[in-house]
Length: 404
Image (cartoon, rainbow, N blue to C red; front, side):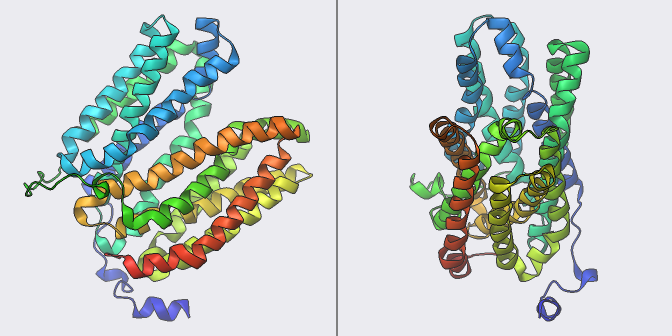
């Protein structure tokens, strides 16, 4: 049946497909990798750096570090508005530059309150730069290959996630934190040169439109936004508590958990992009939403290392279907001049979910004396999201989509 649908699709003939890896798209993917890699390599060493330099406690250090996420979340709606209102390339370059300069500030500042303010600003600049990066990349894609292109573009983030933290840790152990910050600045400098090489059309001068909610948040994508909060909520505890859960279970090598998530993500992002463009978007996201429930159920009830690491790969494989699917839905629900807003809406759902998941996960672990109930709660929340997707979100998309 799927083959028949593909044959009837206007995009079924491979020789009729427009090029995907254009100069602009390739440059944007490379710059995006450098943006995220520089961020991810800082993750494992920053808590150590704050504790050692400022002689503070773990709770205060955690609060300072979390201000990055708060800053990114706070700017998301405004990031979409700016990307849709201003020329995208200059905005991307300037926020990428400000993001780069923040790395120098970590070592220059000697007071913890100033570092906290810098950390918040770093998140703000990252939120705008990453929204601009996604939007410029999507502008470079032909509509008939948008799902495939979004999948490949996401691989740049997944590769950064898979290699950044261990690179940062290696550099810190071998050379100290000064080298980690220096490498981050150098890589960002290369990213800035790449952004300079992008070719984008100047912003068309449109009649002044009054400010309204849909210039900051894509109202048409409320079901997608709500569904994605559930997915982020489940992933939040994985980012912060999986090593503690592995220790609770007596399982070593928890670092491989993240590597297996990245492997599953990359595999499915590469394998399913074309299927999204051939009309299987709802099928693929639905399969991902169901698979991730199974993955978290295995994680919650696992009793062996084999099941623990299998669940990691399944989490990644399901997210490899979900990420490009939800982003494609949001973009297809938006007008051309709302793509920045669509991307910020998509990313806001993820950020809100992550934050809520981290907060709730820590409170639940303290309340119930362990992390198994946390991941069981994640599985239940994903089951709710799965039902919501099939009952509401997918039907809403098919009724309201403007493109794709």
